[in-house]
Length: 123
Image (cartoon, rainbow, N blue to C red):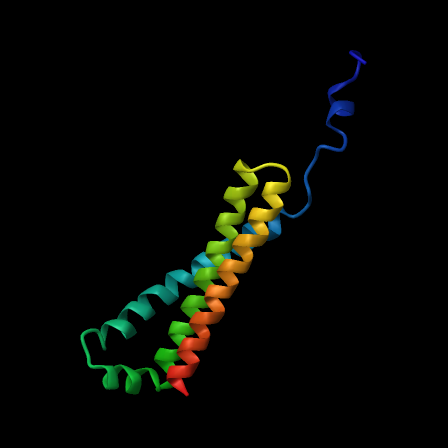
């Protein structure tokens, strides 16, 4: 079939129709992290070097606990989206699917453990 047009060769090899949603997810999480990271640094820096009891008392307050939990959740979501793009670009075949599932489980699991630890301190 050497007489195929460029259009005929390209049919079925187009967009998966999910790139825009993924792009906006990354942009929204990066803007959220632009706000959350400085808040986390200032709230964490206030108790840096404090005793164990001081840190427990500080994170028992709602604002520092919420900022830390949001930073963890949004940070790991952003990490997962970034690693997924990296895997989609450089890994092929069944190993691509396995790597994406594995990284999703690891990132959401780490976020859940972090939020659980903060909730345990805060409550």
